[in-house]
View 1 (cartoon, rainbow, N blue to C red):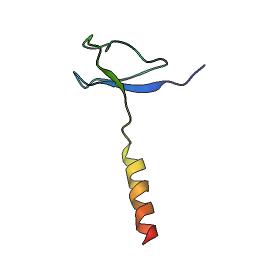
View 2: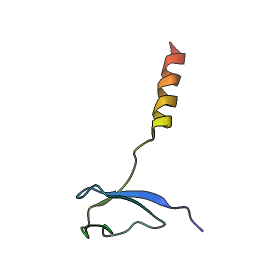
View 3: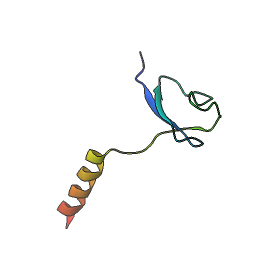
Length: 55
């Protein structure tokens, strides 16, 4: 069973998860769905701490 992927609607900004890429937003019904590539706070903090170690 495949894991769920994160998506968001560029029209209404609704975020949701599905096992497949939907054609339409489940909230507003528009076909402006994109993969959600945003990172969480922990990922950003980890990245910043890695940059500090390189100096």
